Every structure is written in C-alpha cells, then in structure tokens.
Length: 107
Figure 1 (cartoon, rainbow, N blue to C red):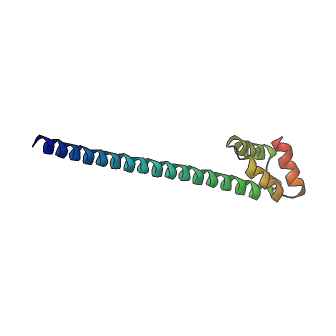
Figure 2 (figure 1 turned 90 degrees about the vertical axis):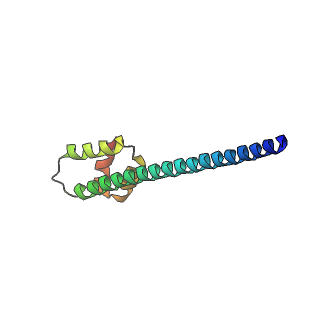
Figure 3 (figure 1 turned 45 degrees about the vertical axis):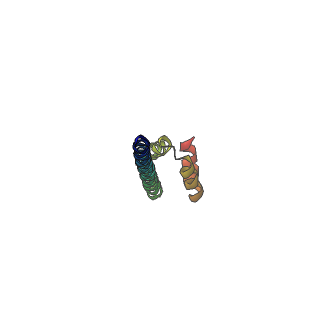
C-alpha cells in the first residue's frame, strides 16, 4: 500500500512538473512573440520616418527659394536618427548641383 501511495505521489509530481514546464514554455513563446512584434513595430516606425524625411527633402530640394538653413536642419535630423545609408542612397538619386549642395551640407 505504501509503495502504491509513493507511486501515485510520484506520478502526480511528474504531471505537475510537466504542466509547469508547459506554462514556462508558453510564457517564453509569448515573450518571444512580443519581442518580435515590438521590433517589427520599431522598424516600421523607423522606415516611415526615413521615407517621410527623404521624400520631404526630395520634394523641397527642387524649390530653389527655400533657405539653406532649412535643408541643413533636415539633414541634421537625418543624421541624428542615424540614417547614413538612406542619405547616401539619396545622394545617388539626386543630380548635379543638388547632390553637391547636400554633400557640402552633410560635411
């Protein structure tokens, strides 16, 4: 009788351990999904800011009446959010004087 009680206790303990492990595994999965979601949301926001700023810069560079300081502020903002690659891509897209203007302002 004593052995049967110990066996039942051991089985119950094993079942509890399995349930705990499943809960931990489920929680870890939730944490991973939450982390992935936050990273994706952050990446989306960064891309939206980049696209908006670069588009704004491209549109306004064609307007020669805009003061140079305005472009400097926009490029400083691009630099502040560490978008060097996007800015270099922008340089390649621009032609002649505009490219030179951006390059001079960036340096």
